[in-house]
Image (cartoon, rainbow, N blue to C red; front, side, top):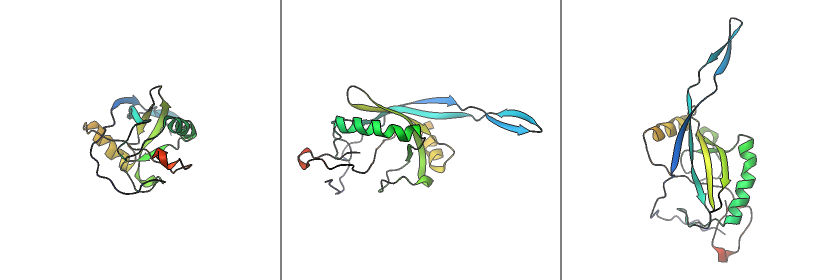
Length: 163
């Protein structure tokens, strides 16, 4: 059972990421019977720690390493199917609202120390993604939060929630 009471955020862990700009492949267009390449510019990729196992997070939760490892493995299907999208803000619902999508997770894996590392692509062609791009390019420090519905109940003595 999770505690749904609101808590004041006492500290804030910044999403410590590295920005990599990659060229997008050119768009091929047919003009007067000829195929031409239209440059698409660069995409912004952010790589960093998405979550830490066995560590109290900003939402007052602790994610056990075994649970986090399982969920990262399960999440690979969404990454492969290009459905691992996220929103700019921290919505109340666990359902992703597509009109608010700002990024897509391209990679996520567990490191030996229990950190979940991931690569996120900013979707700068969506309204929220354009805002995210502007924030990143302006050097704004960002946080990151994961959310999923509980798949199973853990013993209350563990005082944790799963993603």
